[in-house]
Image (cartoon, rainbow, N blue to C red):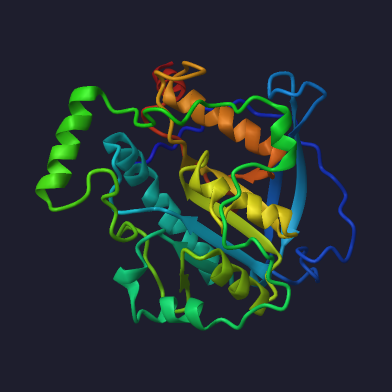
Length: 315
């Protein structure tokens, strides 16, 4: 179900020398750390067009690293979103297993589904975390934009009809969800089963609980993955913006995410290009990105439906 083609153009890597003592760096040469190439964008143009890619090499201590899995629900009101999530979920699970085995802390955050996990050891762990002394005052709230984002036009018009289903398919899917006794606008009940939750993980959709967990473990590096990057992944109380503005070293796993974008809306590009445009926005104004191959090896994930991948495969 996964595509092994990268479908990406190689970029010139700029290795940045990093200062000793930065808290997320591996302390000693013998530590089996994560070695990442963090991608950002810089440029004088306020829009992403004209920006250039810059990468920096960093080593992170797995014991001071958390991975937050955002809203990888069992169902969604958009059937295409469900299909895309199901396509990359197996690779995400491989990555979580590999990162966990190396000492990273895994936080599963399927928002609005906490009732399903009542009594689970991972849920109890989040609920019982001691209150952090440095709890940010607004960590329980959404953060929909950082100050730097206010200077540019938002890359996607994602507010009207955000589903990219064809009209007939969307109606069929809503009818199917209703027949199952679910709210077709909010049908999710739990995290997708492909992602295995271990007892030593945490389950929460609370920014307060996430912060308490991170501080109790001395975690300084946070990796976000899941859906949807232009909404929950960046905006939720445990999302990228809150982590960034409150001092965590936060990165996005850019090949294990998706956008909620309808190509019938501005900027009128296909879904995959729309996702890419928002990733460029993230790299300019919110935080760096990495890819799953930096932990798993092999090729990074690409969606089989991406026309650029299909074109590369057909050559």
